[in-house]
Length: 150
Image (tube, rainbow, N blue to C red):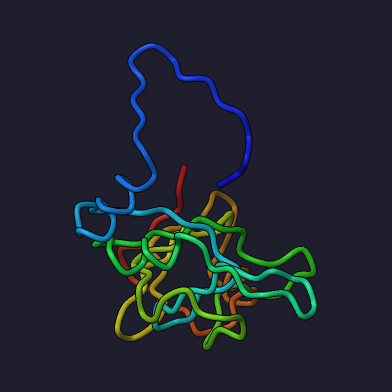
């Protein structure tokens, strides 16, 4: 997807992309890690946008992944370059999948998506709850067992 050259190291294996989609669509993957433009508090995922006015939308293989994988983890910066929240009450970008995200890893925290919304699991070292809440576009649920990473 990144269109970068790679070199197979000894012991590496690869297969045709048609086989990879057969594995995905057949429900043979337990976990997928994706990036995100936005994640809603109910687990909706928006991770694609052409960014070009009038361009034809192109969601790519992520839509197959969110439909065919048992768990979806998102890794993303907590905020955009402009400082806007990426974890929101409702996505404003086109959706890749509805209510599909299970867990979110950001530069500030680890969050579990629950039926009640975003539940804070862990904070990055030196980061406190209020700092994260101020940068999150939806309420965060505190948990007594949450810990600071370190």
